[in-house]
Length: 276
Image (cartoon, rainbow, N blue to C red; front, side, top):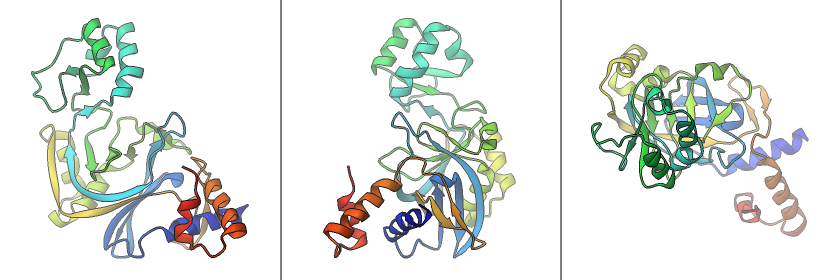
């Protein structure tokens, strides 16, 4: 079983670029950890919280480039969460919206004074998608006090969280898909290294900065969201992790099919044999 697990992960490595770049970040989902590298040296490692393994909340596997961070952000609530979670709670508890700093708005990006009263009819309209909903910036915001953006088609990003106690759990698949980071000031200091910003500088911007304050990186940083259930760590130790999303077996099944039917197919083309 372990040998097959290693084989599946060797295939995954072959799908990656041979050169990941000088400075880059990778998140290994089954490991629940983020690693940051500076020209071959790991300079940062921290725990992360990833997407749940059910209800289509798994964090996708992809890569892109981080271009900016946003301090004290709004949380633009996805319509599915508005419909399935927030509106039902608000209809049962009229004080829920105000207590959790939510706002009903005509569309994302409007000014703070362009809000809509949280009446029952307006809440139902928001659930239908006629209005949008956001959570005001602040320490109780679901995104915490900073988010790190690498624009992508999945709307996935790295962000702070007020739910710090979840990092004490061994299995940390709790999110709707985005990735919560354990130590945002340390990540910010790595990201803005060229500006000379320290962890204290990042913390100050998180706690005292202006809301919705975007700061662009001088140079984009590649971000790789990976899925490795077998890997060798910095000490040279072979590690195994649970197959969180059940992604190993489809690769192993495709390898078995290739071995029997198409032994001359290159491993990099194996993706054509995987199920949709």
